[in-house]
Amino acid sequence: MTQGPQGRPLLNRRLAAFGTTIFAEMSALAARTGSINLGQGFPDTDGPEEVREAAVRALRAGHGNQYPPGSGVPELRTAIAEHQQRWYGLTYDPDTEVLVTTGATEAVAAALLALLEPGDEVIALEPYYDSYAACIAMAGGSRVPVTLRPHEDGYALDLDELRAAVTPRTRLILLNTPHNPTGTVLTRAELAAVAALACERDLLVVTDEVYEHLVFEGEHIPLASFPGMRERTVTVSSAGKTFSFTGWKVGWITASQDLVAAVRSVKQFLTYVSGGPLQYAVAEALRLPDGYFDDLRADLRTKRDLLSSGLAEAGFGVFRPAGTYFVTTDIRPLGGGRDGFAFCRELPGRCGVVAIPNAVFYDHRDQGAPFVRFAFCKRTDVLAEAVSRLKSLSAH
Ligand code: PMP
Ligand code: GLN
Image 1 (cartoon, rainbow, N blue to C red):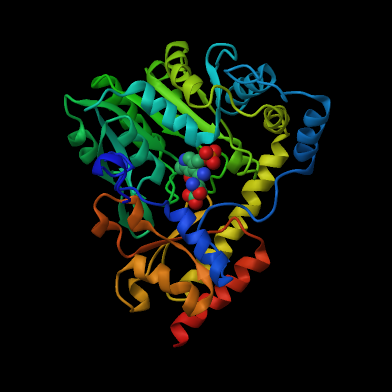
Image 2: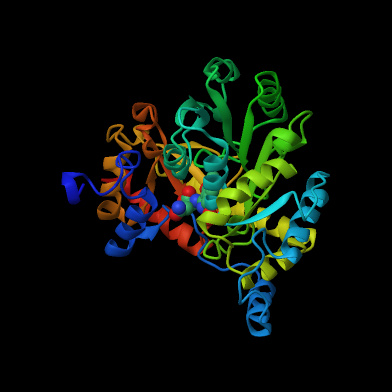
C-alpha cells in the first residue's frame, strides 16, 4: 500500500486487507484475454423492453431528474410494499417501512453502519458475498463466519454451529438466501431455527434476498415472515437480479419503522438520495405480471441445467444450485490439484473461460480452496461455447 503523509498508508487499516474485488479483477482478466466471462454475475441480455422504455419516459418527462425524496420516490416505495404483499403476504407501510437504496450493496452497507457499534460481532454464512466483510470492517464490527458445509447434493447450514457462534457480543446475523456463491436456498426448517435463535438471543438480522425470484427447487421464504422476526429483520433486495438491470443499482430495504429510520440516518450521509428516473421504471417492473417472473425462472433453470451438466461432463464436481444464477464446482476431480485461485488465473489461457475462486468468500480460505463458481446468466449459445471450451480441459 502506498505511503502517504506522515509515513502512513493512505488506505486505513480497517480496509487494507481487502484490495481489489475479485469481480473487477476477473472481469478485467476476461476483457484482456477475450475470454467468455462466467465470473462476475451479470446477464448478457438486458431486462424487459417495457421497463427500459419506462426509464426513457421518466427521463423525458422530468420524473426524478432533480433530487428525489431521501426514502425513494413514492411510486417505487408503494410498488415495493405491494410486491412484499403480493409474493409473501407481508405488510409494509410504504411511507415509513421502505427505503430505496443505491443497489443492495448500499442497503447492506447502510444497515451495518447503522446497527453496529465498534466491537460488535456479526455472524455471516461462509462463503459470504465479498462486500459483507468490508462493510462489517467499515463499521468496526468483527465477523464471525459460520461455514456452510458441502455434501453430495449441495451445501448445508449446521444449526449447532450457528448456535455456538452466538456470544454476548453478537449484535446481528447477516443472512443471504438464496445464497451467493453456493446457490443454496435455506429451507423453512433452517430459517425457523435462525429465527428462533435470533428471538432467543435478542439479535437483529440483516437478510440479503436479492435472488428471491431465482429459485428452481424449494421456495424462497423471507425471514421476516417468521414469528417475532418482523421487528428485528432488515430485508434487502434489488432490481439488479430480478429484472436483469444490474447497472441500474436500484435496491431497497423493508423493515419496521424504527429499523428503517436507523438505516435512513446513515443512507442520507452516504448518498443522500438514490438516482431518480430509474426508480420510476423499477416501480413498473415490480408490477409485471406473474408470467414475467415465471419466464425468468424457467429460462435460468434451463441455463442452470445446461451449464451444470456441461461442467459435470467436463470433469468438474458440481453442486447443483437450488437458486441464484451461480453454480459452484469442485476442481479436484479434474486432477490438477485443489488451488481454485491458480485454476481461475490459468483458465483463460487454458481454454478462454473466466470463473471466480470461491476461496475469496472465506475467512477459512482452506475450506474454500478447491471450489470455483461459474455464472449461468448468459445466452444459451455463450454457455454452450463455454462448455465446449471447458471440455477441452480434460482432453490434455
Ligand atoms: N448481495 C448479493 C448476495 C449479491 O450477489 C449482489 C450482487 N450484485 C449484491 C448483494 C449487490 O447487489 P446490487 O448490485 O443491487 O448492489
Ligand atoms: N453479485 C455479482 C456476483 O456475485 C457481482 C457483483 C459485483 O460485481 N460486485 O458476481
